[in-house]
Length: 101
Length: 101
DNA sequence: TACCTATATCACTTTTAGGTAACTTATTGT
DNA sequence: ACAATAAGTTACCTAAAAGTGATATAGGTA
Image 1: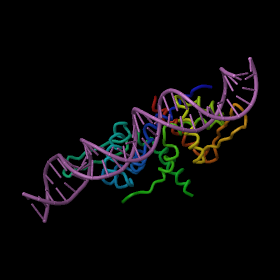
Image 2 (image 1 turned 180 degrees about the vertical axis):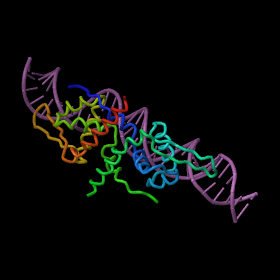
Image 3 (image 1 turned 45 degrees about the vertical axis):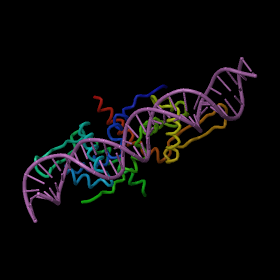
Image 4 (image 1 turned 45 degrees about the horizontal axis):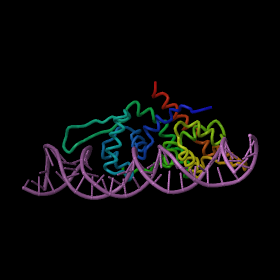
């Protein structure tokens, strides 16, 4: 009858921000070069993009591969843990899509 | 190759805050009296509780029934639109639950 | 030598979300 | 009279998220 423990929070702490779900969503199709990924996300600023992917990396949802070339080349890819969010991310997208109808 | 429209945002705008998903989640089992619902959400303040349910009402996810008695009695219930989030909410909860293992 | 490239960082400001504590309301039972 | 009740509001404050614009890097090419 009192408080109820609810792991929903743990999930929301990982994907409950403005940019994280979008970045993850675009990585569902496979790994992407940094610049390409950033261009896929409308209106994300330079700073927020880097910050977001780095946090996702820290949380183990995304991996970062750096190629030692100039100019720099960096690729981002979902980890296993990140891929396990696929169903959720697609559901969120589908639900929103149905809203607009 | 450029920006990609993505309705994920529409969904996240509705449930992407600290308290909203929790409140919705607890309403999945059926309508609840205001005070009961609030007690189910750990650590939510009085202000945030009211604010959250009212916004959910405005967004059409929750309905509010007021009984004209003293002391007041108010019940909250998911709307059809709110219920349509059930699968998503449960997935978010399940995913978080598996994290803790 | 100057510039271009892709990725990233830094200092700073603005905006939004959330937290705290006191107060309101209208009736019933004491 | 007045305290208790359930739901909600208000003013104020802090903290977290996001935005802006400038700067760094380092090797290849004009």
